[in-house]
Structure formats: structure tokens, C-alpha cells
Amino acid sequence: MFGYWLTLVALAILAKASLSSAGEYSENAEVLVVQETEDFLDNPRYLNNEEIGELFDKISKEYPEIAQTYSIGNSIQGRPLNVLALSSRIPDSVNDDLLRPMVKLVANIQGDEALGRQMVLYLAQYLAAHYDSDKEVQKLLNTTDIHFLPTCNPDGFANAKVSQ
Ligand SMILES: *[C@@H]1O[C@H](CO)[C@@H](O)[C@H](O)[C@H]1NC(C)=O
Image 1 (cartoon, rainbow, N blue to C red):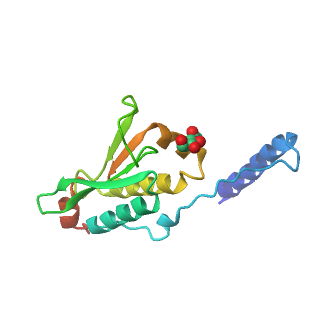
Image 2 (cartoon, helix red, strand yellow; image 1 turned 30 degrees about the vertical axis):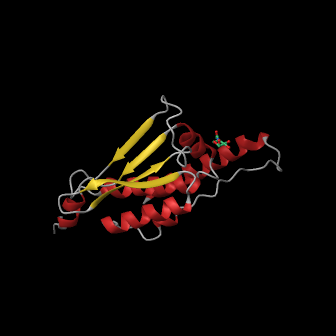
Image 3 (cartoon, rainbow, N blue to C red; image 1 turned 180 degrees about the horizontal axis):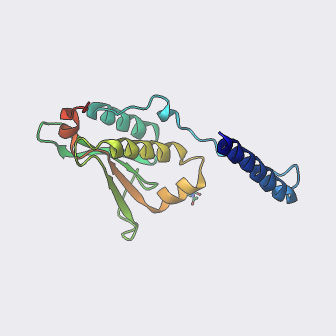
């Protein structure tokens, strides 16, 4: 308990110190606050394969300038392997720049190892939603094609059971 209060006091002192060291800025200095949309975290849970397909359709309709969805085929049990591609050169993705880096993020290779599946989805949603407002995201998607394959084992995921 004492350690807890000590930590709080130390944090308070640190916060005050860093505030006063920022005192060289005028009081009217503009603070750039990037409005971050993370409403995809409002109801955190694992999406099933059909929902992933619907989500990718929605993202590619909402951000047609940078997003495109496709499938690389079906799993043995017939589930589509959904991919979302994000890049500033999506609409006419001609190979005008052969040296442009292309990255593929693949998750959920083991059907019951599902954390990465949702992380990849969140990252895709985050980047798509922030392209307009965040210069860092813009820079990334202006220079790199990123392909998200949140699950390459949708059958394993669908058949996995929660162990008790
Ligand atoms: C990204 O590309 C768009 C379109 O060419 C351009 O308007 C924007 O300024 C670029 N953003 C950055 C951060 O390079």
C-alpha cells in the first residue's frame, strides 16, 4: 500500500516536472491532437470468418481510394481466405513502382492461436480509418503496400474449442 502511494507521488512529481520543463512554449501554442478512432475496440471479440469478409467489404467500400479486398482461395472446408490490401495506389494499382515495398501480414496459422487474427484486423481498421487524418499513416501507405490475411486457417479457428 505504501509502495502504491509512493509511486503515485513520484508520478505526480514527474508529471509536474515535465509540465514545467515544457514552459518554454507560449500559453497560446497550438497543441496538435490527433483524433483517434478506435470504435472497433468498443465490443472486443473474435470475428468469425464470415464477419471478417463483411468487415473487409465494408472497409473497401468506405475507403475505396486505399483499400481493396480479395480472396486467395478457399480452405479445405470451403471458407474464403479473406485479404485486405491497403495502399495509396489501390485504385489503379499498376506496377509503376516496382521497388515499392510490399508487406504481407499473416495470422492465425494455428487455428486455435487466435490473438494475432484480431490484432491484424485492428491494425487494418486503424490504418484505413486514419489515413486521412494521420501523416504517419499516410506516409506508410504512400510508400508501402500492405496485405492483411488475418487467418490462413479459418477451419482450425471454427473447430477450436475453449479449454476449461
Ligand atoms: C500521400 O499521398 C497523397 C496523394 O499523393 C498526398 O496528397 C499526401 O500529401 C501524401 N502524404 C504524405 C504524408 O506523404
